[in-house]
Length: 114
Image (cartoon, rainbow, N blue to C red; front, side, top):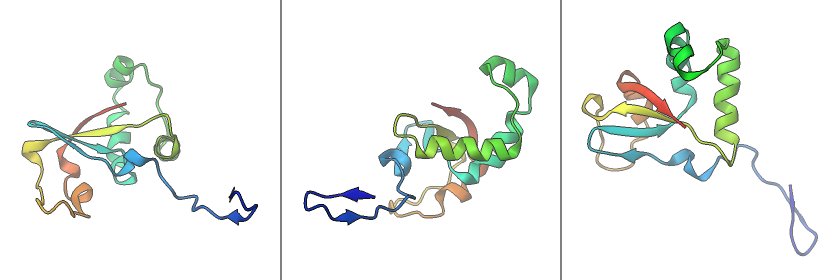
C-alpha cells in the first residue's frame, strides 16, 4: 500500500517486478533474458554438477530452494540475473511482441550472469 499526499491509501500489485524483468539484451552471439520460472528446472540440473558448484563457489540447492532463489532475484530491486542464450540456437520473432520467446528457446540456454 502507498499513502498519497491526500492521505488516501492506494493498493499496489505485489506482483510488480523490477523494471529490467522485461528487458532482453540482444548481441551478435548471445541474448540475455531475465531468469524466469521457466528456466529454473534446467538451471537446477546444471547446478548439480560438482565442478560447476566448485567453479562458482555455490552450494547445492533443492529444486524448491532454487525456485525461491529465482523469485528472490526477480523481486529484488538491487539484483538481476540474466540467462545467456546462444543466439544462433534461438528462433526470433522480429515483431518485438513475442510472448513465447522464453519457452520456445529453453534449449538455447548456455549460462547465466548476475
